[in-house]
Amino acid sequence: GGGTGTGAAPVVAEVAKECGALTIGVVTKPFAWEGARRTKQAEEGLARLRESVDTLIAIPNARLMEICPPDATIEQAFETADDVLRQAIQSISNIISQNGSINLDFNDVRTTMSEAGPALLAVGTGDGDTRATDAAHAATRSPLLDQSIEGAQKVLFNVTHDGTLGLRELDAAARIISEFVDDAANIIFGTVIDPTVGTKVQMTVIATGFPPKRDRAFERAEDSRIADLGLPGVASIEDAELPAFLRRNIRSLGALNSVQETAGAKKG
Image (cartoon, rainbow, N blue to C red):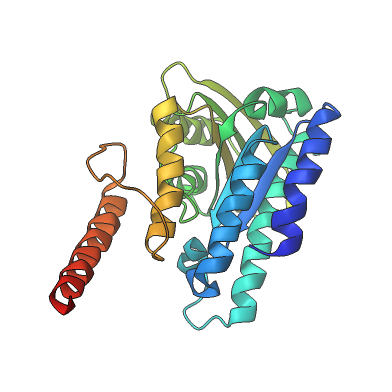
């Protein structure tokens, strides 16, 4: 929503793509309390950026409220937003650069993310006897996900562990991810050994290649957040592609508008 990121990002992305680079946009969207003007600028910037990248991961700052401590300050909230971006970018780079028992490389990332459109990124962590499956469940229920990964046709997931992850653990976690996506999905997975994670297992999931209807649902989900701020948004609530919580938001907005129109008519 600011001048630098919103204005410069689409230009940089366009140059990168013209040079033949795999271009991935990873951005956060403003908190609602940052104002309607900033939100509108961010949406316009996203629209321009979407035209210049292979795939776009957009994480609303509002979702960070679910992972921030209840007593988090404004500064801590923005630090969390920055850290989420760091995790997203680092997860992708680690897949390419770090060694593991099952290695992924740049071509795997390109296969998943080239000309892929909207993308969902989720990170889950687990510990204890069921650490791998807990990490997989946490990733599919990540508070950063605006929509389910269900129906994704391209999925890349990476498991980071300390080197002690068993085959049965990995198999159980992989089955959880595969159950969510399209039956014919191209699933690419790898593992990274990182002793610093200790006994924990971290799973990073990147899902792309959603059917056209789901792509439009992404756009409507973004529009509905603008609608909540009184800006042009979704006009219809009858489309079954919209999640229930979005339909409720839009109904609330419609009811409010009707009340305002009735009040205006009485004054007239």
